[in-house]
Every structure is written in structure tokens, then in C-alpha cells.
Image (cartoon, rainbow, N blue to C red; front, side, top):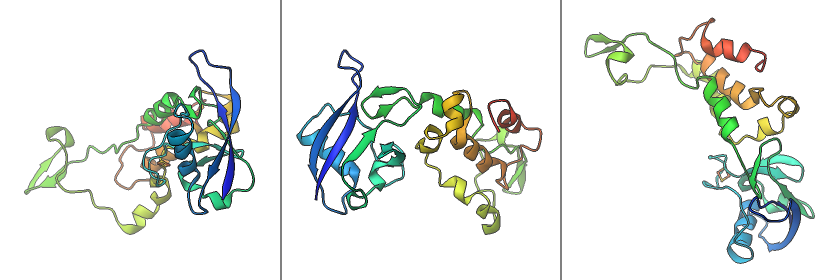
Length: 213
Ligand code: FES
């Protein structure tokens, strides 16, 4: 099928201020919009800039605004779009070039909720108890039942693409707001049966602050 891609372009190095450019692309119905963008870059305009890596909805790199909604270009089939397909960079994040945005603030917010297990309980190894600080880490996983895993199963699926935070009206109004992705990440550890941060933890205080929940 023939698709018309309408892409918002921006070149920070002296190019014209943000503007639109259209490209005709030939795509099979089961090809993804990312395939079309790669085709444009490979055969029509090598300066077109966007991120992508896995092409399988796992890395989150290809998040952009597609026909008005934040989405992954590698997870959107050509057959599921009608008429002209409009591409813009994710809203609310500073644009670096074309469809590539600066994710630094987004990742910093994610880091600020301490996205790792807090657990200083001793663990048993070769009939001896060790603390985490005594050795690099447990040689065996800390066991978790399927039921305990269920509590965090949805949160674990987050691939940090930034779609939710960039589409959040609260984030549009307050760039210090942690945003849904960081809060989901925090809940992933708060609800983890192996985490021992407890009710007064730095993590909970962080998300309960003025720019959190
Ligand atoms: S390229 Fe990895 S999620 Fe789309």
C-alpha cells in the first residue's frame, strides 16, 4: 500500500525552524511504520532523525507521537493506519532533532525513585549467613512465589519508552513532576516481596513529595 508520511522536522544546527515534510512510502500491510521511516532514511533522506533499536517493542527507543497519540513506531502496523500518517516528536520532552527527543530528565526521574531492590537481610550460603555488603551479592536468587510475582507483573513490563509521561497533562504543567513511568517503577519495587525498604523509606518519601503522588 502507498502511504503518505507527514513528518515534523527540526534541525537545531541552523536549519529552518520546525516544519513539516511529506514522503510517499510503499509499505506492505504487515510492515510497521518504523519500516517506513527506515526506508525513507535509507533511500530518500538520510538526514531524517529518529531512534530505534530492537524493532520489537522491547527497548522503547522508537516512541513518538503518531497521528496524535504517543506510540511505538515498531508496534504500529501500516494496515492499522488510515490516510496520511502524521509523525511528531514525543510532546513535553525537548527536541534534539526531528523525532529524537532528550530523555535525560525522564531517566533522572526514574533513577530518583531508587529503582533497585533494597534488602540488607542476611542470606544463607554454604551454611553461613552473609550480608549483601560482605560479598558481591547472593549466589542464589531470593525466592518469590508466582502469587508474589503477580503483584508486580504489569509494572515489570514497562520498557521506559516515555509515552505515558510525555502524554501526561500533569507533567505538561509541572516538569518536576515524577510522572507515571517513574511512579510505576517505584511501585514495581514497593510491591516486590523481596524489597525491605519499609514504610519510611527514602523511596516512599520521594514519591509522596510535592512533585510525586
Ligand atoms: S525499536 Fe525498540 S521498542 Fe521500537
